[in-house]
Length: 135
Image 1 (cartoon, rainbow, N blue to C red):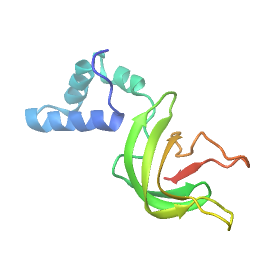
Image 2: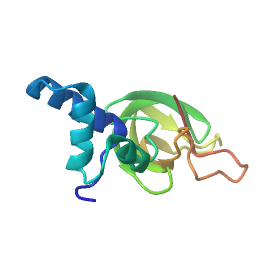
Image 3: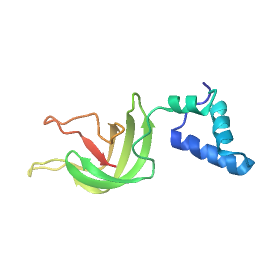
Image 4: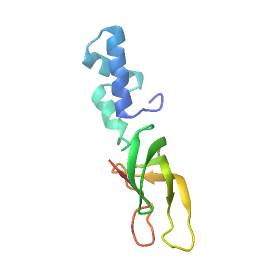
């Protein structure tokens, strides 16, 4: 296949843009997008596109990071492998990720690998995921 395959949502946006600029049917635009990426038809392209990320760059999110509630913004997103995505989230406010009173560890962003459900692969020693992004 030719160029790197974008996410399915981006492929659909490309087809919509093509449809409006060239005044062609929706199905024709989808088929032409598939050919552009080296696939014989739209259905084959969709089957190859793989899982969609649970969040998008710029999206406002909330959830738990090391069991501490957060809200913030997705700064970057990169597809890893097998339905996993590396996400970098900047928190709206500093969060203390240490549960002891004697010291603190303040974080303003986190970089984690999450699955399509928004749950990180890494776990704490007590079994909780490092990050859970509410979807």
